Image 1: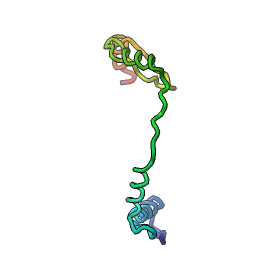
Image 2: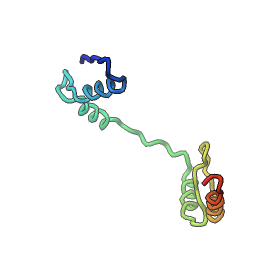
Image 3: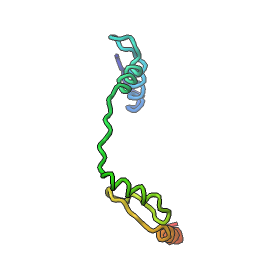
Image 4: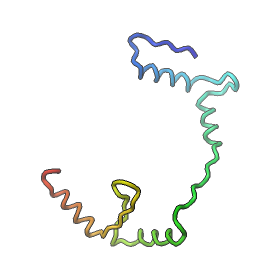
Length: 104
């Protein structure tokens, strides 16, 4: 493929045009469009299911906790920690933040 950058052409326009040409081009070896070849290759990727990092007992405990409507399970703002909070306290905290006239 031959690409020419015109003086008035921005770099992002150049890449957009080049990528469109690449996607629409056909492979000289197979004669099929590039995009179709990529779709075929992606469809044939073998994916292994990741190993569970929780034991069976931990999974059951988590399901039981998630069914309890008196608590809220959320991911922490930072890190990979899970936060368990009383639903009433969570709602009150939200109302306090919404009532703060300096932030809202």
